[in-house]
Length: 286
Image (cartoon, rainbow, N blue to C red; front, top):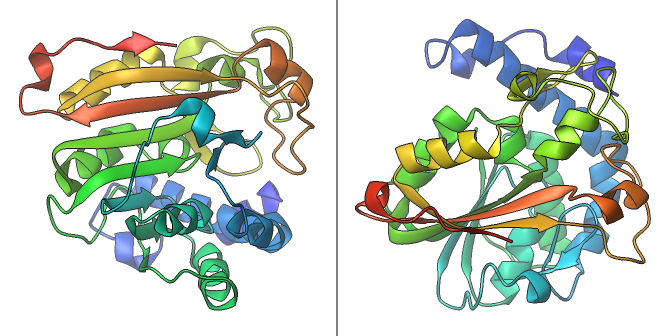
């Protein structure tokens, strides 16, 4: 899968010329090609079941929002999902009364989302764009969220300021990503996390996988620094474990359910944009 992406994504696409460095443009092109392959092999087939969910759930093990309670009542709110994939989170939030917009870099995943809008509904705007450069106006959204999208696949020094630009004052940023611990325990050649540290923490900040794909896994200290630099105050960090009855994810080889029942597999960050975030408290960890 990853080698196919590497074969298809080794050249930067024209729309990135002059916008970012050549190296970053090549990385973005590689990631876009990777997600075209992932959609072809996995996410297109799994999307319908996710669009038919009756309640919002987070992450590889579908932990219900009602247990985490990070979004609250979204009725009447303008919500932007970035790096939305097949956009099932946006669909669920639209049913809950939010005015949703979904943004993703992958044309293939957005094509799947459009097909499911026709088949299942609801219909909401879908925008093809990189989360590091979103063609939408300033201060349009009350909430921006991302589930295993922007945090892992986009440069935090670029996508966090972009999220801050798009939020209204006091708006919330909610994003889920792989736990730092899991990133440190995944073998260099890829595969599921092991029960020992396999890479230095500093090396996890930016990971070039051997078969293709470039990910970012900042430390907790890095996340706090980067969020505050973009004008956010951290409200909470939820460390997400697999439920007791969880099974291994059918295609994402990151952690096993057994591993994730002992150590947090994912981290769910909640931050608020404040006029004077630099003097605000750092928040809490759960």
